[in-house]
Length: 170
Image (cartoon, rainbow, N blue to C red):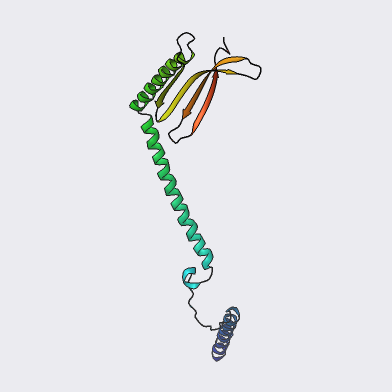
């Protein structure tokens, strides 16, 4: 039995030594190094700080622009809703009809051949409108009747319109 025990011990020793050799050869070498703590946030570490700040700036600007656009869109929506109320439509229609009647009467007074006014003036929403019927002659001595209309704005600017009478008939 001693031979068998010796053989078993030898086999066990060989297996243990093969196991230890394989463990040593398969494990990587381990070296010690200094432990260094590094911050991931560039604000603390300083690495890539400018890019980090630009990213934050862009995000803040995008949010502010989005908020401003949302406010502007909401205000425009409110304005459209206010302009589309029944009362607003009624007022626009009434103003349109009043201006049409006023312009009709003005044209009748200015262009009436028999009893037309030679001159006149009125104020409309802060603008002064004056008109005068004149006879204007060209270099050849041919004379035509014209209406000279001057519109003076509330800011002092003026526009002059010359309208020939009796031309462009139907």
